[in-house]
Amino acid sequence: MLEGVVSKTSIESLRDVMLAEVEKFVSSPNAPFNWVKGNIQQGPPPKMPYLFRDVLCNEFAIQVTKSILGAGQHNTMYGGNTAMPSEERQPVHADTGQLWENLEAAHPAYGLVVNFPLVDVSAENGSTEIWPVTHVDTSVTFQGGDIK
Image (tube, rainbow, N blue to C red):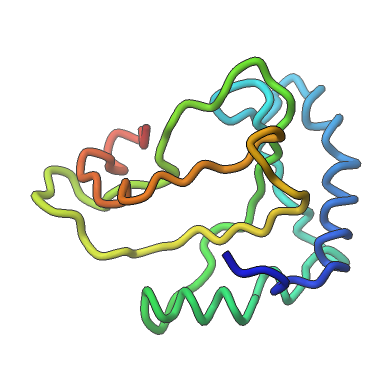
């Protein structure tokens, strides 16, 4: 956890524009829910003035990523999740998996997820659960298109 590495202005600007669009996402007939109604795949606007260097090219996140993955890393996804009140929890799931099937041991890390919360998160409002050591579970793969 790195605190204070994104400016308050960047966080507030993204939070304000994304919260203003939540109703549009929720009321859409094709709402992009993740697993259960209430968890919305809502990315930040990919246009100016919402492309902030301290979010997209955060020097601290790059330093951590480079120390784990080595040189040459790059961002392959820029998205977001909005947790809304829901009667259901998302099931435990992997966002990604092993690159190959039937491995006897997990391969080295090939990617990292970097999150910048736009609101304070807690168990009461839908914080993200992290399950340590699950990255070495060789039963979770990309094959079959299902990374549950």
